[in-house]
Amino acid sequence: MNPVLDIDVMRRRHLRQIMPIEEVVYPRPWTTGVFNAELDLAKRGERYYIVGAIAGELVGYAGILFTPDDAHVTNIAVDPDWQRRGIATELLLELCWKARERGCQGMSLEVRVSNTAAQALYARFGFVPAGVRRKYYENVEDAIVMWCHDVGSHEQAQRLRAIEDERRASVQGSAR
Image (cartoon, rainbow, N blue to C red; front, side, top):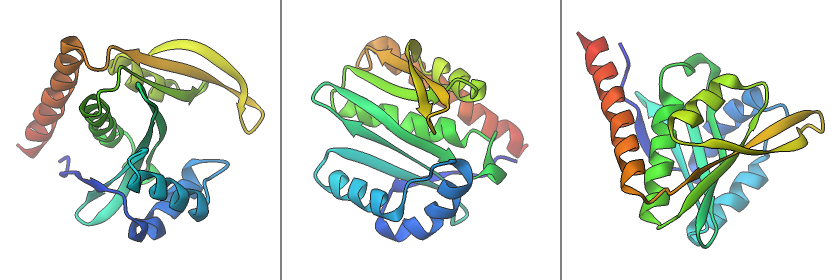
């Protein structure tokens, strides 16, 4: 059964649950200070960070930064014990809807060349490769820069609704 993911705006109180995930998921994790600085920017409307919890347990988090016309995904992280259950999909859905709400025209992100699962997730949302940042990760691994254009389009809204419908059907199907 797929449990329900509750999504909430990230608060400082979440950091003690976020940091263990951050430290296991990323080779060069952000510090508490970086998260605090990002949350300060979120208060000013320059960032948007969310957490996902199941039965009160924080299992993932994600964020975007805003430019005048676009949004950039800063991170999406899911506790390894909870990966491959659609949590990243739910978090990215929330980020995409927020970008639309803010009037963003496009969204971008970087993803490791080796992370083909994440690349497939992003492609499902309409992100396409647009370039490469050499040795972006730990000065060793390249990053693929991916863009989703026309974030505010009717077609993108249809895509997001279809992904939501698939998620709902998956949750309902596993509850039977």
